Image (tube, rainbow, N blue to C red; front, side):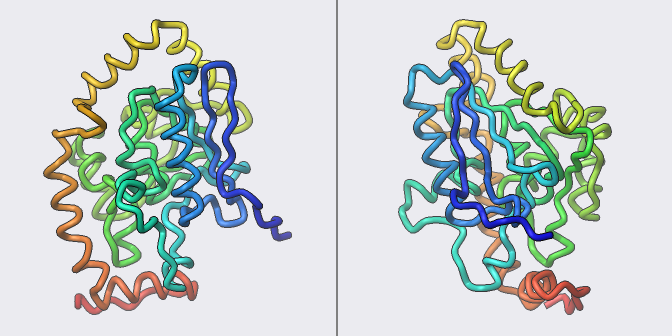
Length: 268
């Protein structure tokens, strides 16, 4: 049975000093389109400016997917995933990947997190995963690359050879394996993942908010919303992406996905 279309691509709620941002496209496995980018990005802006918000949780609607990554079907139709406004585009994938705010962020991974879903997890300060979750960067299976920070953040957050295996094979790992490797802080039953994330947020918001925010900025190396240590990774990502996306294989991978068939690679 098909699920009804979501009227709002992003939902924003508050629980005390915690903002909960929910990607609300369960019918599309919470894949990211322009509406998601704007909804998440504006929520992050609000959280960073609001002195009453001390932590942010990002999660997905439903019990199947946290985020399936970019909406490849939207891309195949020629739709843009990001806005034209440079300041809003600078927030990065899903309005989140390069949106460096001082408030601690927690990914509550309620289901599988593939491609951009894993990249949202990598962009978060902390993460809690459902026991049903899985993580992976399958972009190479689609003829494209992990362009939202995954290609360099994965190797900085996981043992290099494990990260390279995930990048080059495109194969996913389970939530239990993600916990073992330190990609997530905790694993919980699917129905308790948000509750577990809120409990982690409560441990953070019990502390002095300005001290927590300064500690995050120091740990991240974030100055005025910019993380200098990631500059070279982003520069190389942006340099590589146009050629890969414009290649015959890049077009074939996206088309094959939309047509639900196996891609035929040509190395061109």
